Image (cartoon, rainbow, N blue to C red; front, side):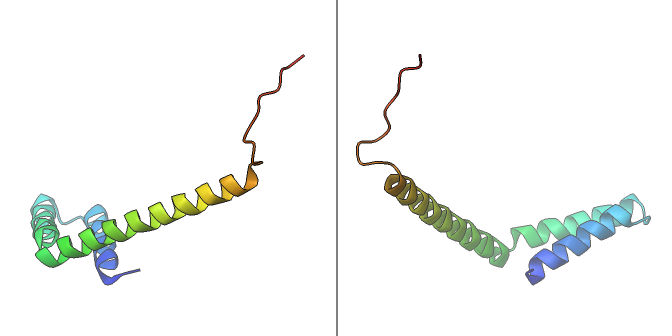
Length: 82
């Protein structure tokens, strides 16, 4: 688990469990919004999205190859049902 994820989870847990009232909630919300707008956070998010996209495409290609190798060279044929 990354540090950012851990901090976010801790923040959410605190907000949900806090009895500090609306003022503290607003303070936490404002800080979270500032963090989300930070260029370093945006860059990390963009890298994660790019990596996830690349991995998804690789997984799709691997699955496609497996299916093609499992299907007979003639492809699927429909059989008439009696």
